[in-house]
Length: 430
Ligand SMILES: Cc1cc2nc3c(=O)[nH]c(=O)nc-3n(C[C@H](O)[C@H](O)[C@H](O)COP(=O)(O)OP(=O)(O)OC[C@H]3O[C@@H](n4cnc5c(N)ncnc54)[C@H](O)[C@@H]3O)c2cc1C
Image (cartoon, rainbow, N blue to C red; front, side, top):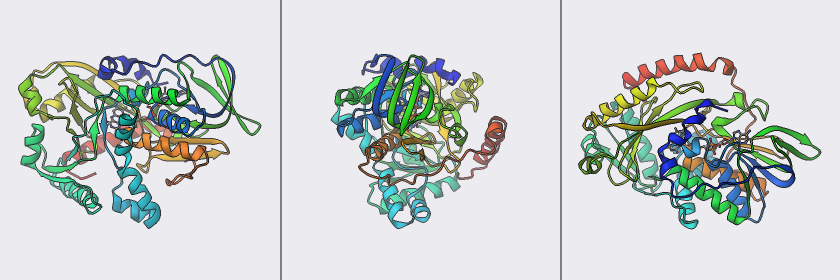
């Protein structure tokens, strides 16, 4: 388990979530289940909720507590879409599957806000759109092309000039960009707790402080050992994303767990709250080593960027984030940073999430590449339909492919970061 664990309760959402913690019991003794889910983030909780609503009785085993992973610490920007543009999806997957993936990606934010609405989750949802802001002329051409692809498919996107972005966000450092109206924001931990509450009410069993130490085949099903108990289950969904350990051979080596880090300022004065990303709009940049930012509901600027490539937080990156924030919003010079925290996300080599079924009855969904609130909720639903036998995934199911240089990932990625830094400085579009 990553040592950034200790930053969890420094996250702004921990103090501000109006959805209370679940305080679920520890799994102990011996139990039987039809479907077990390992991991209590959005993937696992969305799967549990959709399964329970369909009449199943899934059992969720979470090592720490609901939302402990990236789910409870992220930036709260609910952004639809995969990192691949619609035309790329059609070219790579063909007209039928490509279109299904466009529908899946395009509708992912709708699914989140529908769930929030349907289950009355108190998570400060806003739906004011996402601005993707171009850091260079080349990046602007790239995002305009992206925006036009969605526009051609009926999404009422807006193309924004430098002046328009400045008027809406309070910074004029960007060359222009686009606004996707399907996007929005929420309190990420509160959303997770609300999903858990709804899943439990629908019939799912959720256990916290129940880390799975061993997963092994037993007859036609699976034996799942936690520190205090043994659960036998016909099917298992592994939903551990950037916190994946060695439960499934090769899985940990198929992703690159990297940290993302966030800082939150003190509450801004009213004049700055009206100027800097007001009224719920969220923004991320086109840089490969991108900053992403929003206001919290109580008027702080929440500003995120890359963390370390290892499991240890690096304090100097907080300074780099603060400096980036002031470069972006010079008005914030002298503004106090009240808290900072980090979490692990899972990168994949193809930039796409992965679905695996390495053995009969064993399923995996992970790899959202830092854009996972909407996608992991959608993949949880896909997994629910898949495990219950209701529908095969529209998304490709692939073999687990360990990355050859995984053992050397830290030095390799540190070199990669320098390379991306240079490309960003030179204005290349990623
Ligand atoms: C700092 C940060 C900022 C981000 N910002 C955004 C954003 O603004 N917008 C966006 O869309 N996405 C964002 N993301 C990505 C998004 O948060 C993730 O893609 C998403 O939360 C993944 O959810 P998950 O359920 O798959 O995994 P996680 O939430 O990471 O959950 C995995 C869970 O598995 C549990 N687990 C691991 N091993 C075991 C075990 N052996 N037994 C039991 N349980 C286990 C862990 O404790 C953890 O709770 C961000 C990520 C980070 C880290």
